[in-house]
Length: 88
Image (cartoon, rainbow, N blue to C red; front, side):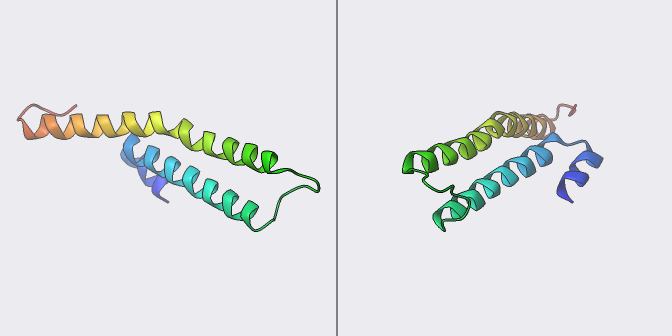
């Protein structure tokens, strides 16, 4: 629902936050799944589990630049409004 609202208002900040939140939640779910022993193939080593978590964490880190840009855009917009300059 938040993503739909973000698209309606045209605000990239909400969408970036929602995507990042989903990526973090997916990482946590994968971590918990592996910790419980689910989703691990027979004969998998600790190295395999580590690599699997690394791949999941990579998805989270790929979302950070978009989140950072959205935050900066938000700060710029608020700063212009507070200083009396018209917001874009």
